[in-house]
Structures are given as C-alpha cells and as structure tokens.
View 1 (tube, rainbow, N blue to C red):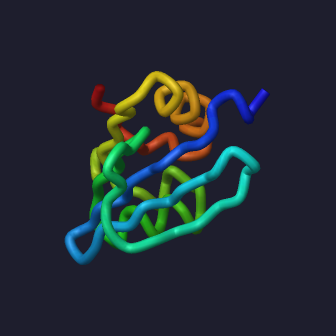
View 2 (cartoon, rainbow, N blue to C red):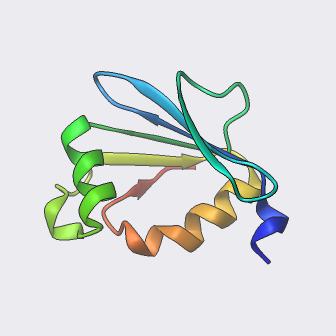
Length: 94
C-alpha cells in the first residue's frame, strides 16, 4: 500500500537551513542539504518548532501556527494527510 506513494521528497526549511528527506521506491530514507527540485511536500518552520515536532511528536510542545506545510503533489498530499495525525500542530496550506 505504501509503495504506491513512493518515491517521496519532503523539503524542510528553517531560518538556519534547508534539507530534503527522500524515500526511494524501496523505502530507503536519505537526507541531504538543500531543496529537492521536485518536492512532494514543503514544510517551513523555526528550527525550534520543527525540532520539537519531529523529536517529541507532542502537539503541546509546538506553538500553534509555527510550522506551515504545503503538499505539492497528490502523492505528497496523501502521505502528508496520513502522517499529519502525528504532527497535529502543522498548518497545511495547499
């Protein structure tokens, strides 16, 4: 079921850096500096907010509205909607 939505490239941008999290068709995950040329999801927030969201997955630890997420592709939107329950504080903007 999940493989139908792969590969995926998610771009995370903070005030300090931009990185791309890439999952290939086999489910292998890699991270590199910079932005993907064709991202599936763009996520922007402060370093503090993104660190809190990704490390704790506790919405109480993330100030409301401090992270903005924008699915770019339909497969990115499907994956984002599936995963966003873990990151309730994300503010999706399509």
